[in-house]
Image 1 (cartoon, rainbow over the protein chains, first blue to last red):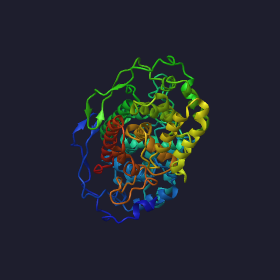
Image 2 (image 1 turned 90 degrees about the vertical axis):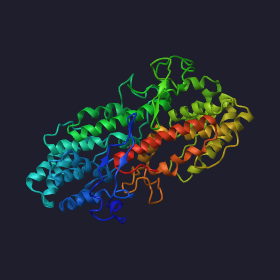
Image 3 (image 1 turned 60 degrees about the horizontal axis):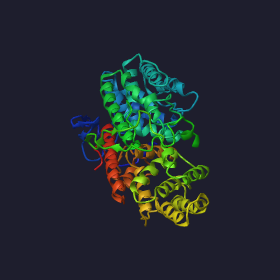
Length: 264
Length: 264
């Protein structure tokens, strides 16, 4: 996994660190947003290096996560980097090194969706953080803050984080389950699990209990469309609303293709 | 698989056979279409039975396909039924029994995406049709017409069908790779194959060759966005254009989430 982000020529460690915030100025129609993005060049950004450049200790966190984590298509390096970016945004008053350290390590113990101990993965990740971060130059308070956030981030555990960093990490991780990324990730997990795409007789689970072990589309109704009300930070709430509109527009289009009415 | 479409109470074999065409009257904005659908009731349709009701021989075709086919999430019963509906629409002058028989049997030999003989699957399906359909009440001319269409439908084989039924089946199968359904199916196949979602450094494969064995999103550029110009029937061309707009809107939204410019 490291190779995929290090083997290319890049404009330099700090080359993309500034001026990349998306400007939400495009016309918004039907829940869709026409992106206007300011980029330093036409070349897509290098997402890892500007994050690691925030603090020298993050190199160690990244290297440690790479040796520990069992990645999958929905929880790969790119997911960690997107979560790191949004954790920074959702926790503007938290030291950036802690925000990035929490994001990079939040899935360090990653169990498959259908693993019986799935709900304990975040607690096991937090324990791993407590063991590893002291040796990587973090203070006891910093280790504790990161570990608490990692412990409480997960959806399946159902905890409400007690700290600003915890709230930011939970929001950032949930954002990555929404929108176009969320659609791709939920369908990819469906392929991994071998579940059917949808129930052709009742695609929105209106006359039955939704069952997201059986049908990929059911996961919109068991989780994805329910997330919008759970965000804790201002930045997370705004982006969650936008990405939820994206998913609803997607389901409306899917309904047209299936020739059924869209979900309520 | 048969159970999933037969075990429920249904409004009767002919209950949903008419009046279900989607009306494309909703406002269309940003490539997205707000669906307006007339349905006989709020209950979603039973997709199989009205199709089989077109001709008594189709029960036999369906039962045969069920015993032979190795389904996967992207090539399941629901896919066969969607392809059957669109084959009928794209071949208005072909006997409906042949259109549905071709659609139901087009993937009867289904090989995985990464199988070395993948490109021969449609020829092997056609051979299976030639062996099975004479015993199911089809005339030699009917068998031949179905087999030719099945042989030539596949994208990977690259044939241009010689008959109206062949053109209709190819269009119907390609339509199911596009739009919101196409997004879900390509991501699901990605999960099956264990490939990464996208290349975070170059998600639209602008500075490298697209590689859809490595990245799910690359498949938009190796195939999905290229299909629009390949449709052969009037109905297929119109719907392909609509579904391609859907995919482009999806990628625009994905770009906003990735904070890069959308693909050209």
